[in-house]
Image (cartoon, rainbow, N blue to C red):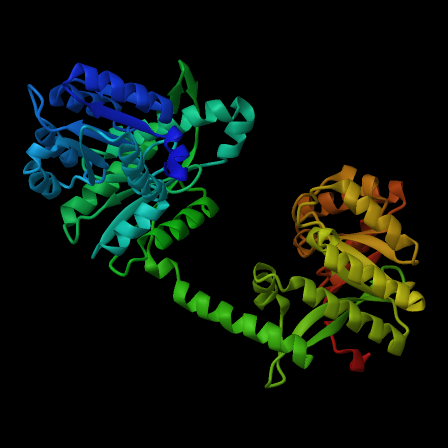
Length: 541
């Protein structure tokens, strides 16, 4: 017997046979080798069982001659419901003329009576190829077509209109109610989508909490309008009524991206519409090419990735230095190292043009290495104190972490003049890791500060918890303190709190005499901004 017959233990079979003795014997064999069996004594009962348990049934075995409805008529009805379900016909040799008709109906295999058990099991095992293919295109929880099926259907469509529906922060619901209940939420949500859309459109599950409704209506304007109206209605229904699971009403939030395309990119466009909807705090947004300069963005990203890679090799990245002065004396205390890309034309390019792309392309750790190497060289040449920025990602990146400490060990004298500023605008997810990093850095004589305080995840407890030397107050709070009293009050509060902890403060974006004097009165210790100097090449210091 075929060694792969053990795979049959996971399948459910519908078996139709009118002869009771043969039915009982074969049923007993099927019980031994398969997971579950539905048994019918004629085609009419078999058809009803299939309609009721279609999602469970993996394979059908049927006799041909049966009362009420014969096997071929049943097969015809079932194939109209699911043309891909594998069906094995069992027939006597004397009825072999039925085989031609069976083949025309799409029957996969046949076995001759009296049934040879080995032949039957091998035939069933061969039919499992469908079962495996079905899994490639079907979601196992909801029994909806999956992402593979969507991609295939979009590829075969001339014009596609679809809605991508996402349950916001579904992982929170899983944490709150448990994954088993979370599956029930997804099933209930699936039924709600079906109730709204399935009468006219095809529905897919394309991710753990993402669904797609596909409308292939070509250029029918009224069809497109109806579809978009249904998407809005669905959004309103979920927002108002939520989802009911086991007599419990669950409030959920969803985001919908709607897109249409004749170039097979509707799914991609819908994802972009969804992302923008989230940024704009909208529940539903339709893709508009004028709002998404995607081709231009992609080309620019590719260009910058090439520039970054070649620039690192060609030494096109340089550390520019901006002075930070003592608030009382206005004398330069140190410099902040700010990266610049120098193009072939000699022009400086600011970091906002390339750093976000470098982070997405996983090139940022290399830039940090370039910066630290440059800073070491600058300190050796100029004997000045220099600060360099670090993100939380830099701290937890093993390669970057090791490079920093190896460099400091190799340059102990220069390390005493290096200060590291941790970017506060990026959320610190683990304070223990940062505290450990700071403790190791201090052993080399380095000072530690927090940059951009007030720009992102500001937390006064963090200042005390991290045992830092100084806080750099974000420029968004500083640049208008000379004429906005509320901003001045926030800055003063930060300054006073830091003084009580023995932490120094630095004001960024000091661009005028008025801002300088206001910041000085508020108790700021150091100043940085165009009023005292722009970032310059080390050779001009």
